[in-house]
Image (cartoon, rainbow, N blue to C red; front, side, top):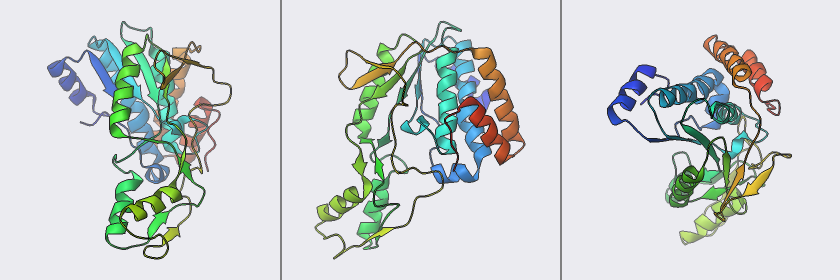
Amino acid sequence: MDIRNEENLRRAFAEFKPEVVFHAAAYKHVPLQELNPWEAVLNNVRGTQNMVTIAKETGVERFVFVSTDKVVRPTNLMGATKRVAEMFVECVNGESRCRFVAVRFGNVLGSSGSVIPIFEEQIATRMPVTVTHPEVTRFFMSIAEAAQLILQAGSMGEGGEIFLLDMGRPVKIADMARDLIRLHGLEPETDIPLRFVGLRPGEKLYEELITEGEGIVPTTHEKIRVLRGRHCELAPLNAKIDALIQAALSYDAPLIKSRLKAIVPEYTPQ
């Protein structure tokens, strides 16, 4: 299902009549979005607008937007466009009876594009394990834990919140690669070397879950925190998003980045 196709979305909503929507559809490959910024905008931003609009029209009761730690001080198109979508979902709450919330977290082990399957394939073929940088770190959780916490955060939302999942301590990717090699009964550098290939376009050494100054409060769940009560005006935001989408439709990368920065001032494209 292409979330950019309003007709297909309306047909699906009319057929299944969902009461709760978990919106996790997005492009997530950071370097590819740096090369195709218009696609990032049209899918991650315009697609989210379509989902929200149709959810409001069809009487959806609860809408949970799955966000990412890359929205915090974004340096790439993926993070910046997801932050715009996150802001839109937060801002549209109160426009209908649907409760709109967002859930922000890091990487999911074993998901599509995750490093684990890539490392596994490289180890199986005795190829060097490729890591971008010796110091790069990421937050991780399992698919089961992520799904459970998203469901719980979505159920406790009153509308307008951004929930933060406790990701634990960040993991150094090089250490993860070495541990995985050892789990296969091999020795790092002796049997299989690590090769550092450099950060890819748009990537940061480390990710964060909150921006400095964002006020967070605990919830009844020990692994879920929440950002509440931030002021938002929908009409000005919609105007800026419309201008961003027009830039995407013109395939003008510098203009896209400029208009993204107008919405997300902390965005610092590489």
